[in-house]
Image (cartoon, rainbow, N blue to C red; front, side):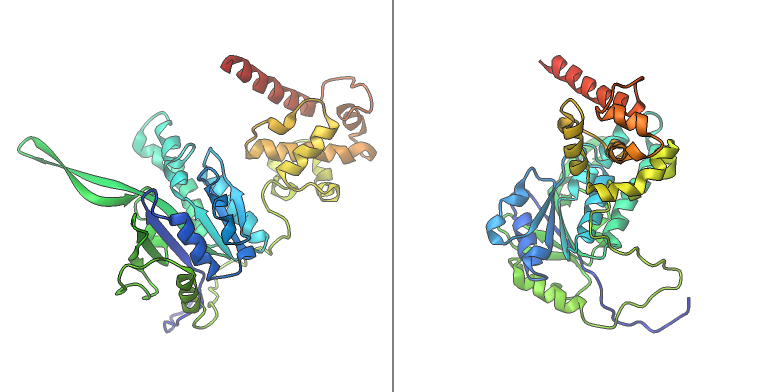
Length: 356
């Protein structure tokens, strides 16, 4: 680490689009992205109930549906998967849900017992990791965020007054400070900059975001020298041709106690199933019951993939357990894996009965 002269360097863009419902944030983000790269190199992480598919006529972009609970970890997994698929521009539509949605940071915090103030120390690292995933991504990222009317309360001589103070973004305060530029879009679809490190929009009259906006931003970020490496930086891991989420490589030894399963982790790749969906599809063919409809969290998904490994365990030390599990012979005893799956199905049926 040494003192050096400031140098304009090439950089990855972090652009924010904020606005109320109906402002056209998703549409504007897609148009901007189309000026930054080709349509097939754009991915939209969609938390808005399928709105990401409404503009399919614009071009053949990619969509990653994200459903509740909207945990920071789900966002990070989606970002990593897009990076590993060679995506160049990621649109996160929207980041509001990570903060103020079902399963988002605020909801998690509000449900925690104990001291509200000290509980923030427990959830802040999760939110910060989400922010770092955006800042350190190898892709250009466009985020959309909802805005709503803001209010301030003041008290004078015992009388409380509520005053409108304009629109506020529904995300943690200070989110826009992390961005290269932040554009506010009104209901007339006109954009103006509330923050701009590029200098492209500072003195510009309100304008409509288009592919031209994306081209201007790309020209700006590609000017300058290559990024200067910092000695303390660790090299980024090489990109994988398959999504990095929910694969055998993400399962740590602490999460798997069975030594036979540990020895079989690498064989999953040979089975051709590297995602939760592929694993469940294969499990449906091998196991009784409709496991396809089970809602699983990340840990359960990893467990499912480890279970899939047992399909290739017939020539290994776990032969009897694998044969029993996959129906080749009558099990002498209930295996932990079969118990896990049966418990999942039983739980789902019980919930369905209660609802009816």
